[in-house]
Amino acid sequence: MSLIVYTDIKSPYAYLAKNLIYQLEDDYGIEADWRYFELDIPSYLGAAEVDDQGNVLSSTRSEHQWKKVKYAYMDIRRRANLEGLTILGTQKIWDSTLAGIGMYRAKESGQQVLRAYLDYVFNRFWKRDLDIENINVVLHCLDQAGAVTEGFEEYAANQGRDHLQSIRQDAWQAGVFGVPFFFVDDEQFFGSEQMPLIRQRLDQLLSK
Image (cartoon, rainbow, N blue to C red; front, side, top):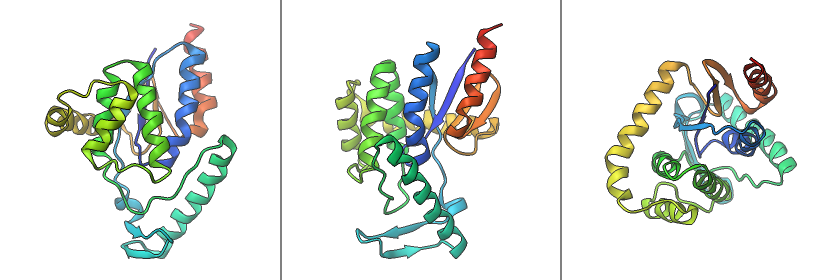
């Protein structure tokens, strides 16, 4: 039995799913295989940049796309309030490549370090307190999580970047199109709202 989880730091839905996935791991005594799937947000929601007051500085979004984005953040904040989480809308479309490479480096040190990294990066990013495009910032996040930082800059520029792209390409070919995305063995589930079905499937597999 295997559980694969795809995430992206710049997805608020992935942020809201994070603790639910931890609980799933703890309840079933399993370690999910966390993988990174960087979203191409401009391809389906357009791109925009706003200032601290929410004034639009630049945008390629249609009116329809703006409506979808505004509703999504309204819905996300409702759900975040139930969990006591802070989610501030991003001011631009971030490149989360380095954060994803950092996740794989943290993963090498085990589940505890991986969770510490995800907690630190997700929490600060969604408070607008983390520049995930700055390698020194990502190094600091790894250090705070207890991960090995030696050689990370070279890793991020070479093997780590290649690994991230390879995993994303494999995920795309396997049917992944967003996050959070789950595979329980070969069965696909999209979105944290599928958690009851994921638990049901795990129960079925464990009862065999």
